[in-house]
Each structure stands twice: as C-alpha cells, then as structure tokens.
Image 1 (tube, rainbow, N blue to C red):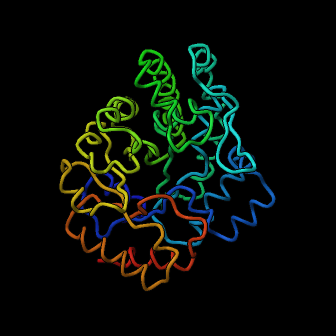
Image 2 (image 1 turned 90 degrees about the vertical axis):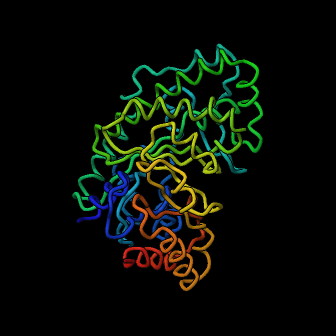
Length: 341
C-alpha cells in the first residue's frame, strides 16, 4: 500500500497498517530553505505563481516521508477573488481593503468568474500532482464560510470578532445573504481543486471556537454542511474546527469524513463519541516540536498507543506548526509514526 492509498483508506475509516501522517498547513514555514526562499519572494508572489507555490509545497515533502502534501496557498484568496483585497500590515496581522458591514458592501462582492480569477490555483495543484507522481496524497483546502466571514466583516484580524457576531445576532437577513455568497464561492473553489486532482479537501474553521454552541450550529456548521454536500462522494472532506471537538455531535452533522481535533481532548474519547464512519485527525500539541526528539517520540507514542485498534486515524498536529519548530523534531515525529506498528 503506497502513502496515497494509506491516507485515503484512513479518511474512509478503513483499517491500515499504521496511521498516515501529514503536518498541518504552512508546514514549510519552519524550514530554513523556506525562510531563504521568502527573502526573494513576497507571500502574494508565491501564492499566485504556480512554479513558486510548487517549490514551497514540496520543501517539507523532500525533507520528510509524509503521506500527503497540502498545497501552499491562503484562505483569503476567496475574499480577494470576490473583490475584497487583503494584505499584511507592518504591525502584523491581516488587513482587508474594506469591511463588509452593510447591504451595499455585500453587493460589492461577486462570485461570477471566480474560477478564472483563481486559475493560478488550478495550475499550482496540477504541477504538485505531477511532482507527487501518485506516491503521496494531495490535499486542497479552503477557509470555512464562517471563518472567511470573520475577516471580511471585521476588516482585519480580531480577538473578539464583535462585528461578525453582532451581524449574526442582530441582522440575520444580512448575515445569511453574505454567507450564501461566501459559501457559493467556497463551493466553486473546492470544485476547482477537485477538478485539478486533489485527493481530499480540508475546511479550516479557524474561528468556530468563538461561537456559543447554538450559534456555532447556525453560523458555521450549517454552511460547512452545504460545502460538504456539494462535493459528497467525490473526495473525502476534512473539517478542522478549532476548539470545537467537544461538539462532535454537531460537527458530525456536516457530513465530513474526517474531523480535526485539538490537543486539549483525548483523541480516542473523541473518536469513540463519533459515528463509526467518521475518522479523526490529530492531535499532537505543536509546542512539542519545540522541545527535543525524546519528548517528541514519547508524546507521539502516547497518542499512537491510545488510538491503537481504532480505525480512521490520521496523525497530525492539534493545530498549525509553529515557525520555530525544530526540523530535527519534525523528522523524529514522522519517523516515529511511520515506524509504528
């Protein structure tokens, strides 16, 4: 069984000889070769130039024997394609060129022609797919509709998401109109990625955890289900909803094949609480990769032993890799998982 087959079997909860492993999105940013590369190219240049995106996507794959690669891109390419540009101010964070607060703001956004405006993504995926040569799976991704909405409504990075949550609570008509547009864009975007050859799609619901359970059901899970339904049966869909694994019953209603889990819950407990056809992904604390190889092996084995005998596990971090993670530790993590029986 090659790495791609192992990954896809795990997504479908079929027994495998060991859990497949891939490191969370932005895996390359801890690598010295990535930092050298970025001295010559801006983030936007890399995202929009297929040859550059290919190079950054493949950097961690060349270093480590991981079972899947995730395309280098950004979740905010969707608002950008809809007419809302984004950037990175000198002080840090993200800044949109305007905030979506009114009906007129929503009307400025367009889904028409989104495939042509994101055609660079199709080409990037095809280049990576060719490079992987069927030996590793290729994962495409998108931000969840709710997470995209938080940036679009706030107009920047936020710690409270006051404007997005206020729109949801106070003006459901406007909120739903915006979410329908965003969801339509996400659906068309993931279909574009599937047509380009991805083996799975991941939705990053980065800010689902800022919502109360009932609000999460209506403001996030409902719209993710629409995305999952739109591609049902074509490729497995992974949902990583940050800090929401305690609401597995709600996440299960999205129809996702795999649920990402933070490190703050025991992975086997989450797995056993879900319907048998749903796999789990996770859930090593990313900070472990800043320690030493002995700690990495110990903590990885703890998760692997806890999940032994439970089909449907993709080994992963409990969140994104940190920029100061040690390449030596990442190599130890991959070796520990790939040699586990």
